[in-house]
Image 1 (cartoon, helix red, strand yellow):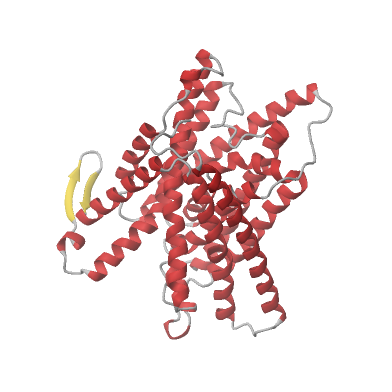
Image 2 (cartoon, rainbow, N blue to C red):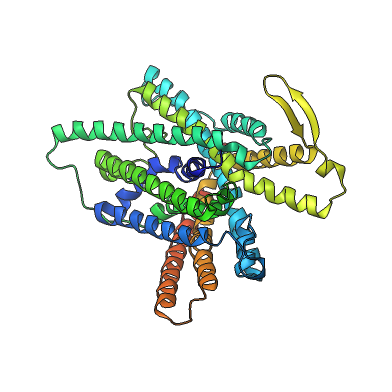
Length: 439
């Protein structure tokens, strides 16, 4: 089922994360004009560069027509040199960071379900409703250990479709609750909209980094597509579906949330309890978030798994621990090939992400720094440079100058985002308490 539908599902699963529920906060910092404008600018830029990247899937020159299976392969084929290592560092650093961040975010949503029921029974200010995140991180990691043993990336199509449905569900619930709140406010007040421009930092640090996945996964997703019709044409359509769907949900959630809460919009109006009632609907939304992140974690982790396993098999091709597949029969599942290297490595990786998540309660802010550092090279620099090399665009031509201007503008945005992330980390360190994360 390697089709436009599955490719689009993978993209939506990766890009529409629970961060969509925090966009109201970002819009509150930028205001009604600048907020949506920035969001649209990044959407258009990401779609443009993803189109450029889709055409670079096949190798040029003497190797013309050969598939490039990963983003690093694409960079190696078109640019080469030290840029390949830079791409790998940015790509896999971001992937590892996101899986750790998803472990934290999923645990927060799980905790929010218990807190919602606690608040419903005892009141919104009940002290005993504060709950540790650690047990829920362990539960999330235990499930990921099982899901991680799915050996092939393309076999996760069903997981991505389920996760995409979950993302639509909780986003729709968030929008619906916001609209209901706006309706109540309109009946009480004549003006609920305040034109208010504030800091750029949070909006970039927490939200714009998600566009990185459009480039990080374009090549990985494209590799799962059939060659008829051509992969680049299918990938362009999938990119359009992914970006347009994502932008629509971002706009709905951000604008509806800002209209409902104004400048007091919480960081996440479901886990941050912008709403308390109806509690069962809040529970349903947070359950959908947790299920979505179960799938999204795998979308981000599978390229890391494959990268390390490929390195091991190339370095030790005769090692049976690494290369041998052992056939076993699992009741209700059927025959399954187990590889001990895959079993150990993937289990260790999942445990590592969970432990880091529990040690560093402020890791989501650190993830903002990773996003700021990797947004420019993965989403803008490499796609544009690959396109220039592939199309042989003359230096200092009009098209070359326009592409370089876009390059420089996005670099400036990344530097601003990185500076804001560092400032946020400095504040987090002041109250740092490992293994004591509570929601």
